Length: 213
Ligand SMILES: C[S@@+](CC[C@H](N)C(=O)[O-])C[C@H]1O[C@@H](n2cnc3c(N)ncnc32)[C@H](O)[C@@H]1O
Image (cartoon, rainbow, N blue to C red):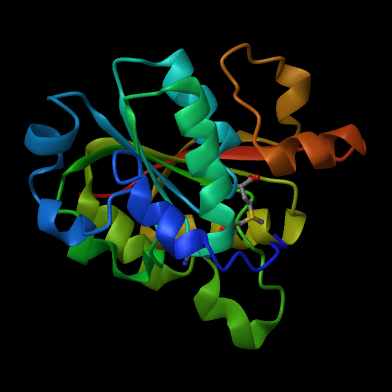
């Protein structure tokens, strides 16, 4: 996702600390008590400009959504969306998701989402894919037993890679869909990338997996 450099982004994130958590590691093990008021916690990695998390927060007010986005100039757009709709059940974090265990205690998260993650098609970049086994090890730790991860993508290569990676890790595939929009799932909340690629006629792939405990 391209983003123009926004020199004011740092200050903007600091000013909006009701939406952006600036010291997320402080809440490790305490998200439910101190942030979500006891509501279940759903975590999206690579939130982008926030269309999905904002839409989900509106559809499910009894769930608290946490979005992690590494690029500052992109996360500011997500902050703007959440502020505009005054969603109280969203927290955004400007971090790299490679160290999730620093932010969340084991079994702290109820559900996770990976939406249109960067495919990193070159073999030498395999470790950067968000379904590489080092990431799966962290997801397994922070997800509750029976907690699900839901992945959506337009990228066939990343989808096939992820299915193999999940199976090798011992995950249970609960659902595999090769054309999500043909299902006409009324609960599906579209992401920015999903809108863009489906408008071009590209199929959207989705899978739901559970981790071994
Ligand atoms: C291709 S975009 C998709 C954005 C959005 N999820 C969507 O579906 O429209 C992927 C996003 O993931 C973010 N991202 C990639 N790797 C990340 C990581 N390790 N931690 C946090 N965010 C990451 C990128 O900065 C980018 O904004």
